[in-house]
Amino acid sequence: MTDQPRVRAPRTDAAKNRAALLEAARALLNRDPDASLDAIAAGAGLTRRSVYGHFASREALVAELAALGAARVAAAVADVHDPDPVRDRALVGRLVWDEVEHVRAMTRTVVRGPLREQVLGGALGPLHARIVADVEAAGRAGAGRTHLPAETVARLIEGAAFTVLDESLRSPVSRQEGRRLVVLSGLGALGLSWREAGAVLERHADRLAPEEDH
Image 1 (cartoon, rainbow, N blue to C red):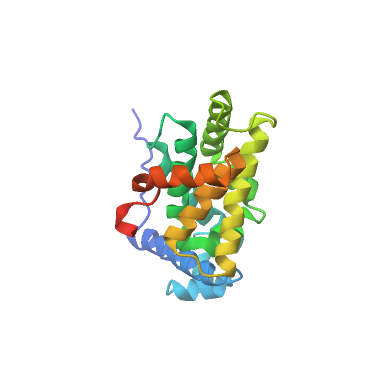
Image 2 (tube, rainbow, N blue to C red):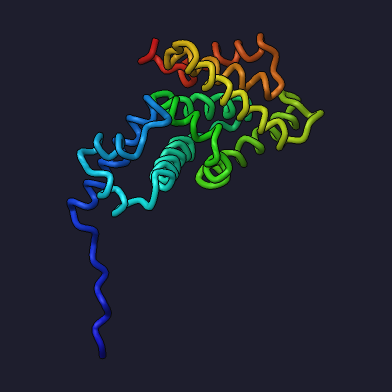
């Protein structure tokens, strides 16, 4: 019987360097989406050459950072559900905003750039499917659009959130105001009037605008 080759675990310092690169990239790219690989390496206390031991290119580093962010968003909403599709849609919007509002510039670069389809079709694929399901359920309940395909309405809801993201980078928007805009615009895309959307937000403020932010 021959011994099986042992898989070596990454060296502790290598793992720390990789984590440092990702953290430096997250911080720098959120301030300057065009930050260079040299700047990211320096931010991590490393040399440009050492970066290539972890990532083949700047694009590969950004892609991994985007994938990690998408996985974090997906995890944040995975275990939180509401049986009412309108409330569920509002709750999902609020949870997603909470995960991305502190990295708005970086998030905008991803959703408006070449990584968009990779991210939206990857870790965030189940989230899109959930939005479609909410749209279909809201339509059956007479609480949402039925004159458009559910897939189209889901894209409109996602587009509304991306527009809030764009606007938040043009002028200061607090976390709570961002939540409000994402919820209201998403419900509007779903088919609710501004009064109906406002009523949902008011009735469920404890979940859509938690008390610690009041």
